Every structure is written in structure tokens, then in C-alpha cells.
Length: 228
Image (cartoon, rainbow, N blue to C red; front, side):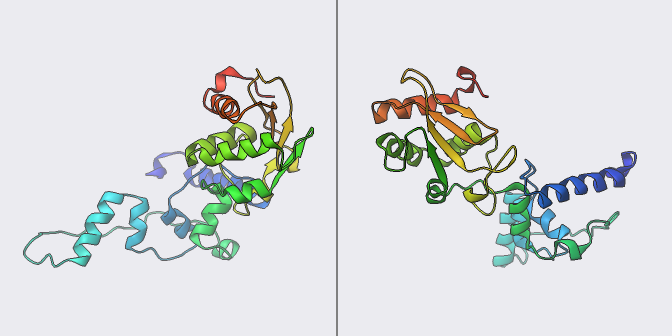
């Protein structure tokens, strides 16, 4: 129904150029499309499994009908869809991807790999990977569920997505910038974040329980601290 919007094809072209610019410069976008949409961009054929990304319940119903004999049980009618527009992207420009890869390079992944995260973290101010506070930090992150880990990532970096290349490809305001933890502040303070630099300022808490409580509070109660 986009034809009812003035200059709708120009808006599509503009949106596509923004996506392409983000791809070239390796920046993730908060733009999570459906898997069939990526297949349409890539000129790949869709099948029944793709319907799950649009309507899971409808997909389950159709899959059940495919797997079972419905003769004299269901009286169904079928419709034919007619393509109205159909102008998308030159397939040569995106043919290097499959649908899942294109989704990842545009929006990143929401699944956190803790080993990858830890292996691509830098430390400052006297912290190091074997420091007791850092060991407590990673123990706390391991205790977090995936949603809480994503909130922590967003708290520190400003985004809750991980680049498809992993944490080594995290970007800051001026290019590649690894996740960083720096010793800072009094133990009465909450952790604070510098999102332009992907840096977490973490006070040297004297116990795991205090660190866990302070970190969780900082991540989930974002109005209680300042972002620089």
C-alpha cells in the first residue's frame, strides 16, 4: 500500500542507501527485518519455513496440514498474490550473502558469546583478567540471563547488538573500540559508562555480592547514574 505515500519509491531508495552506507562503514542499525525480507533482497526463493518469521502460529498450522492427511477434514480455499511493485536492489550487489548473513551485517546478533566477550576485553587502571574484581565481574555476567547481558552491553556501548564478526569488531565514536573495564571510583559508587569509548568504570568492590548488586542496579535502573 506504499503507493499512497507521495514519492514512495524515492523513500525506499533513500532507506536502501542508508542501509548500504551502514554496511560499508560497518555500523549496526536498530533495524530488525524478517528473514523473508532479507531473502527478497537477495532474490532467494522462500519456502514454508520462512513463514515462521512472519506468523509462527499460522506456520505451525500449515506445517501440520502438510504433515497430516486432511482429506475430508478441512475445507480450504486458496488465493493468488499479485506483485504490484517489485523494484528492489541489484542482486549482484548483495549476492555474496545468504539471508542470515545479511541480517547479521545489518542488525548484528542478540546472542551473547561470553568467551568471545571476555577474550576481547581490555583493562585499565590496574585491572587485569586475573584480578579478583574482574573475576567477580565475569562471574556476575555469567549469572545474568541473556536479556540482562544485552542490557549491560547497551549500558556500556549504547547498543544491544554484537557485530557479526564478534566482540573484536565493536565500534566506538571514532572506529574500532574494544570493550574496556577501568578501575574507578569509591565502593559506594555505581559503575558508570562512557558509551563513546565502550568503557565501563568499575569501582574495586570488596565482595562479589556487592559487585553483583551494584552492577545490576546500574544496568537496570539507568536513571540512577550519569552517562558521559
